[in-house]
Every structure is written in C-alpha cells, then in structure tokens.
Length: 150
Image 1: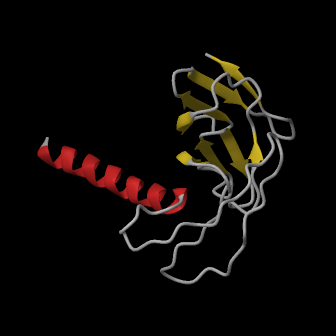
Image 2: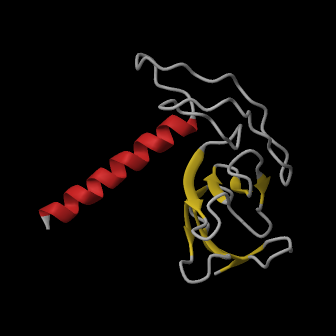
C-alpha cells in the first residue's frame, strides 16, 4: 500500500513538473523567466507554435500558445496526435504540437481540467470540465469532431 501511494505521488509530481514547465511563467524568485504575452487565438483557428530547434535536455514549447494547459492526452495509436485541455477548451494537434485546432463545439464550459482517451476506441475522447460536467467526443476519420454531452 505504501509503495502504491509513493508510486502515485511520484507520477503526480512528474506530471505537475511537466505541466508547470509547459504552462508558462515561473513564480517570482524561482529563477525562471516568464514568456512574452501571446494574443488569445480565435475559437476554431489553428494556433501555430514556434518550431525552435530541439536541444537534448532542454524543454521546447509546443503550444497551444496563449492558453493555460490543464490536461494533456496522447493518442496511443497515433502518438503525433495530442489533445490539450485548457482554460479555453480542448485543442487537438495531429502533427506533434506544431499546429493546434480548437475542438470545442458542444462544450458548455471551456475550463477543461481532465482529458482521457478511451483505450479500446482511441477515437473517443472524454473531457472533464470545471463545473460543467463530463463530455464525450466521438471522432470519425476524415470528419469534423462533434462533442456530445454525457
């Protein structure tokens, strides 16, 4: 039981560190620098991210820019497909984070705190919102995703 709790704590700390590095500005006195402000993208528009040359051992921002990332999910069958739950809804990237598209049709609350991909059907995505419930998005190849409330 103690080992399980330590394992959960380690996973939580790792995820917290990853999200903190990705989300944005450091708190004053932590030695980090705050990124320059970025305009908020319009709903449904692709959000291009900078494509700096990756260096081994150095974090590289991949977006979506202008949003606070609260959750991240990676498609297990297509690892270049990423989903980001943000303070402005769900964003999807099919190119490893180079470009992002808002997929918020049907979400009644855009504060998405949790994301999960159905392991048996990776075209189904679940989003947990801040006070707005849980939503399900069923995607078909070659179609525009349409979330449905559950």
